[in-house]
Image 1 (cartoon, rainbow, N blue to C red):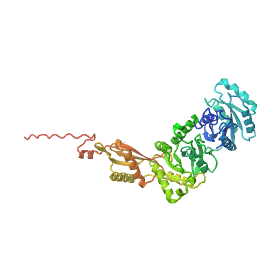
Image 2: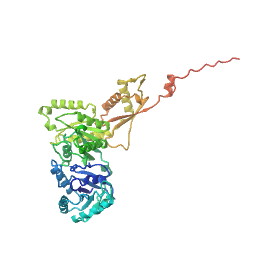
Image 3: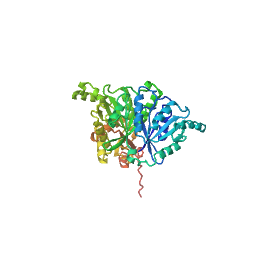
Image 4: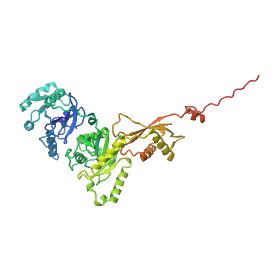
Length: 476
């Protein structure tokens, strides 16, 4: 798929335009310059054929000196892959020297350049476009990313620049590829893991916490299956957010959890499981998402913990801290050295295969009855949960890594306590592991059969039958 790269100096509205073309809020839009650092990619489907769009960090200034070099490198790499370039300028600021410097650089490119004059929010602002004609680009389009003005004209200009260069639309499988969200607190190595999996420096890596701000969507293939990797900002406790941009970053990370098919919780091997790791795990559990726990930075563990006994003890401690995720596979690796990195793909494929496995009705009913005989459900007052029948729900429209769902017919769904639901799930996992996949029970009320009720002298409503009167027989 052809890619259109959006470039310009900081704070001209590149991210707002990117979101407008993608029809989704992907890049963070903020008045603070230098918010976007990494390349952010999406698909624009507003024209006759879909095309890729790439948002980049501001070029030519250093509003964020710690990341200026990496931001410019990411933008330059995106330009090398571009089929066309959207050069965005601020119509209300007018033509600035930095715009002219960038224009001179882009004129040397062999790619077609579409000069996009942004922030023409009102028809009376259209006159601002004339000032930018002196930059010498043949295609100039005035837009308002905030209000959507000129978007159709811009898409048509992109299509004209790519005439004859269209590629076939990606297959449906890749469009609907499962999303893998890489989540965790700041500086645990999420971006390093992304780069290690891709084999390239796709995300900016720094020792400074909070380097990644946008939730990056990156196409990725593993074991012959397409995926979409979501590199997210580190999730810190809300009381520790230093800027409003960071607040938006964390909100996008939390949104990525809700959008994902699989959540990969990354933990620092040196510090172990912290309170914030548990909070993030709670978000994943609440969203009912498939999960894998990656303990990163294995290369920094002390020597005694790398030995068999020490490693076994450390793994046991990590699992104990995440006791509410007993079904989550735990992988110890080093994104920096690549040690045990292949284990990630092995576990992910195992989760994918188990998600397609179905428990037969007969086997499922035997397992549920056996579990209830082993440990009968607790009573609630004078009532106790009674089980009649169970079946494994199979949703044809379910995406890969969907929760494993069972339908249980019982006397009263309200009698199933959370603790007993956990017990049932654990007993079923003894037969079918379902690694990393949450398990759900859909309970429905089913009244007891009339025969059994009659045997106990009850009606179908549970009331005692009135005794029948004996009729006197008159003899002649």
